[in-house]
Length: 187
Image (cartoon, rainbow, N blue to C red; front, side, top):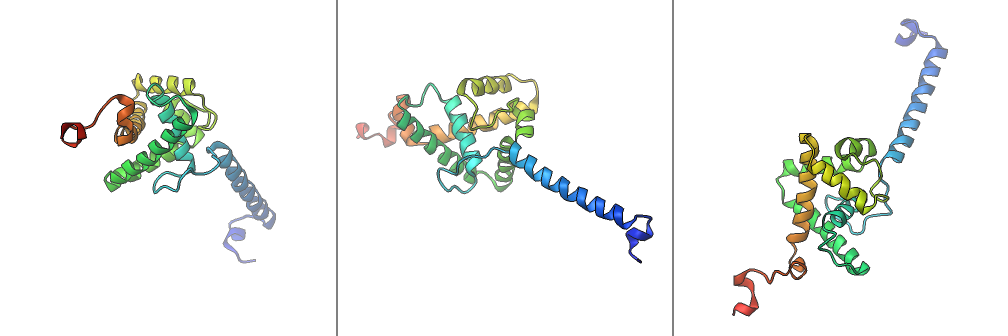
């Protein structure tokens, strides 16, 4: 045999073992990646930037951040979470291209358990996290001395707020009648 690997001192058996262990490593890595990434039942709506896992994440974040403002009735509450998620996707679309890419990277990292834990302190997947637990993690991020965690908090908080307050349908919930020039009561 004149292959370079064999000339370098490897036997055929060592090459086969190495190939087998590489295949096992790839399969194990794939299995582990699936287990560590949030798997959600499917996207509630086909959106441009947010996949199913990111939509679930922003719905959970909106539920935690806006819990005192959103309607208590379950159907209306779920409808609002869907609208906010759609509005967040639209808000990302309005960002400059470089920020769109960075936001997509961040949302992807927040759906992967190890990076989510490093960035937010939350190991629990988005589908299983309770509102009170998420609110505690968000408050810890808001109070953090770590600039990265504080930046992550500000990004997700501001996107959720843009998704809610940027929607005219939110105005009655907060008692805002609209701008003076656009208000039918003002003639």
